[in-house]
Image 1 (cartoon, chains in turn orange, red):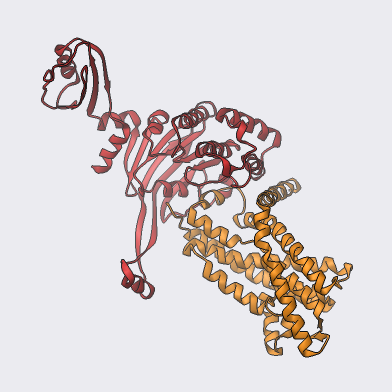
Image 2: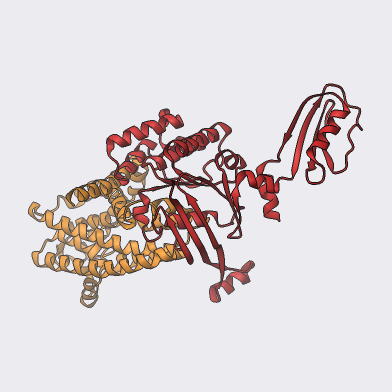
Length: 270
Length: 328
């Protein structure tokens, strides 16, 4: 059994490593697309500096200007660095290459998860490194304590897993609809507003903040960013519990949807 | 004695296809009243395939060939019927079956586009849980068979179609599949690359007893590789038999190329039922129906015209035979 576990880890690890190599093979192209973070961070910095100055206060909803700028770089890393396996699944259905990717001796969704890890490693790293000079110039070094980093890392991992589950559900719709762009767009906009990508949830009206905190969108973006800039043990426990609950709920939906979708798969070109 | 590699019984696959009338009005109507038509891609086909057999599974575009392959490899669920591949039900045992089968879809890439083929080979060694020493031995053998040693370090995007196809097939053979599904493996290739691929397929079948399930529009692939042919059209099986019998059954037309020792005058050979396809100064190309005019009679007539230097009797290309069957 241990040997089988070792073989399975090696198998999926090899998939991650191969996509990592693939991303590095055209790293300048990926870097070029990630470079927009420099402009994003510059605009965010100017905007929030103006907001803090207009309020004539150093702290809004418990966050300093430096906290807010660091919040946005982490939120953007989570958003821009996430793998786009739903699009890949859609492309596989459209070009028929799913005949290869589904026919191999592995779990199709775990294959995409492993693939996504390799992709995310490069993309998240690049977005962070490219945005970092702007953030350090305007906000200085982060205030996060080193002892909190493992807890933040755990929340990041669970956030990515949750995102993976949601995008898998969207991707599997391609088995029937082929194109999933509209579904992806709706989810992205929900994350944008209710996930804390446009504005930290702490700055929202109290009633909206409370609703957003219950929904899963905030757990993929707001949660890791907020804990990175203002770690709180109670909030950490609440976030991890919520992430686990949503993983179970969305995981169950994904499981049912996978079984439903594979029976209805239509592949272009026969 | 070989067992059954494939056992298909009453296999059916239907798809729901959206319909839209042409023009803006059609588009508008499709938004509010989407019309869906049920299309039968595979209609109740049954056949068996023994281990170690080479089967050419052919038909015109849209006949249901690829859909059948995708059901036999477990990608698509059938709408009806049963299938067993190496004792497994493909759509239920897809992952286990995946260890024992290989597939090559000539028009779809499986190699990582930005990486050299060697990286995909190593990945497949892990995916198929191969012992790395055995993998290296197998890879080296295939690399030599396909003569691709000089291509292994080049990103796949830089390879020509023929080079890429040889790498694609190599990738599908690394795990020594017991049955390999080849969906138009020689499409778009030059004669040299085609021959290399045919030689490798023949070797795998003869030396490793690999069952080959081949679809191709290339008559050369079918004639040179398979002793058995199944033809499907509109999802229905219309022929299942030996390649030679197919040719005999449908091949009543013969072609004769003859070269005479003396110059021709122009009106030497007038036979009912014989068409002169081409007339040269010293040669003739004839076609006739052997049911109407026996071959011996035509040959005797030719010999009576003038002394002959060379004579060649041939069947029309298989693709013409297949075309005739489709049209029938």
